[in-house]
Length: 94
Ligand SMILES: [Zn+2]
Image 1 (cartoon, rainbow, N blue to C red):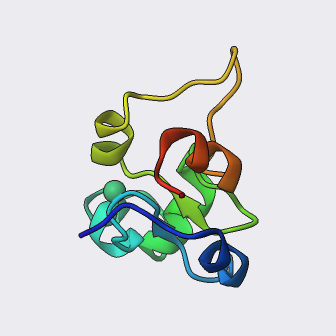
Image 2: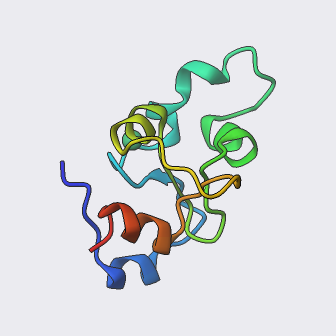
């Protein structure tokens, strides 16, 4: 289970497929436990609306475990999102 992605792969990413960039698991796996009782119809819908690290252009986010594993990245008082550039800075994208 590698956390490394190539720039070429990023260009092919579509935001219609949400995925944790760190562990490459789907919202159903990473956020499934939050969906029940949340009012969202699916884990994808939950992540789209509630996951603060989601980069809506690429569909990538970091799940809680990966966000911690990569040192809980922050940007100068701004919300960190899993953009290709930010993933590159963490070494997730090479
Ligand atoms: Zn993850």
